[in-house]
Amino acid sequence: MPLSDRIKDAYYVVSNGSADANGQPNTMWLGLASLGGDCNASQANKPGKTTIPDIGVLGRALPTDHEPVLGTLYTKLYPGVTIGQYYYFYISGTKGKTCASPANLQSIDSAFDTAAKGIVAAAN
Image (tube, rainbow, N blue to C red):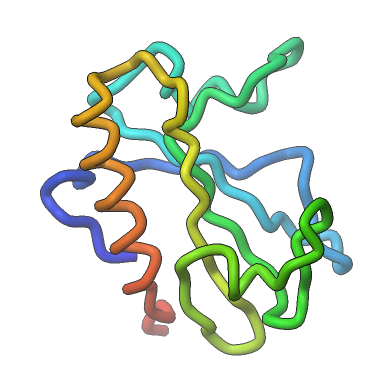
């Protein structure tokens, strides 16, 4: 995932509560090292958390998978890219966050949105 200067300090935490049909993780909580508070993704898998402290989610699904609540294809709902057999996408988590100003969070959200559309397969 190409990181622009705006999100160059991005990191992810693999969710320990979400997996695909093969038991492989399919959700990563996204954060920025420069932000803490309610945007500290490193706290996402801590016991007793009632909210997810992330900036957004990087998800993975089959291109034919539907979001369970809305019943709409992930490919129609979220920006992303298909690599091999999976669709990788970004879901914003900035709504209601207080770790930065709304304008700053919008800029970060936009940068992650753009990055998700630019995901490429890792070179071996």
